Image (cartoon, rainbow, N blue to C red; front, side, top):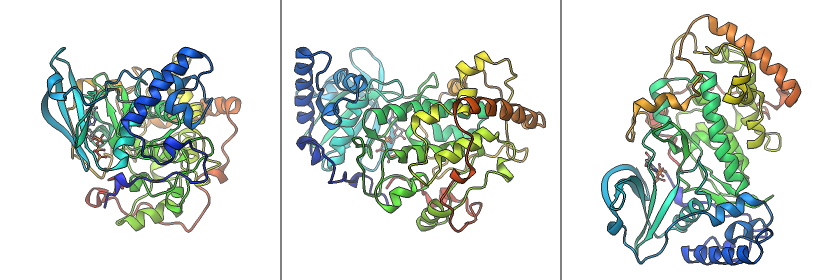
Length: 447
Ligand SMILES: Nc1ncnc2c1ncn2[C@@H]1O[C@H](COP(=O)(O)OP(=O)(O)OP(=O)(O)O)[C@@H](O)[C@H]1O
């Protein structure tokens, strides 16, 4: 089913410089550009152009330059990975390669190594994009790349905390506070990717890893693409349950990552995916037409600002869908994330559950492929102020309190939610509660 590495092509009408327009740039290209970047930086420290990043979108700012210059990645064919690392057990398997544990011969430290077989242009792109983004705390750090005749070995920091999906399956819906803190971390890294001119295109909890201390790291840039301001991408890419409607209809931008993060937020809050079906076609039909109803059932115990944010992220009208920056400034995020909570003298025992029971998240790959999970680090994913999950009547009062406070904030920071913006345009309403056998259908595999 998966055609992941096929990727998509950028809009031919865009004005992308020659070296990048073919998408056939190699590590040598990258190296050459980085060298040029350094030369430029030496000659003209403030206004220099900087390799690949500024070749795509000149003048997008300092962050792009930092991303270009600072990656301390070793590249080249001279050194062999086995000279420097001892290989260990396999910790993940993808269609185009595997991920395995390795230990530095020098320091004894453990890392994850992703081995990608050559042959597809997207493999070069994945390496190049990881190098471009590496350095941000929310991106899995790339330490070294070893190139062999048949493959690349990417030595990355080891995320010993496992995958977010496995936590969600194990724990069921998150408290609003915890969901907000997870989403904030995810959105910070999505915003960074977008600022750096990268669309991830496969945001889903399977690709969000956790460190031992519970910090979130975005992984798997196998479908990621460079994009410049105003440019559009084409081609079917993503994972069915998380894919944005505009991907299905043709041309799209970085806003697809916001949609996918909205699907994630939906799953975090209520424990189920918003768009389901027994077949690919049914899922795509739901993505295009299901009108989400936040007024009843499982949403009863979820605060209005949380519902508002999910609705704004899952808005089919791309121009009305909010940006990563706007998500981060949304009242619900501001209210629940740490700096705000520190200032507010409210009790923090906030928890919702569906119908009083703690439902686990029904995931397509439930239980599969879990890597090493350190349970002791689990609580770190949430803010230190988060409380244990509970399912009692006080939750309703808490929700009301949050609604009032967050609504007050929203009057200051953001305009009132327009109901018409939620999940529009309206189409025939399809019963979204229908199927939850996503596990059997495995509809979250990237394609
Ligand atoms: N840095 C890391 N630390 C720990 N585990 C990792 C790391 N990177 C990847 N993994 C594990 O390997 C799995 C596969 O990694 P990744 O998604 O990058 O590879 P892929 O070949 O693109 O796979 P997929 O088919 O899921 O897209 C992850 O789900 C995760 O369990």
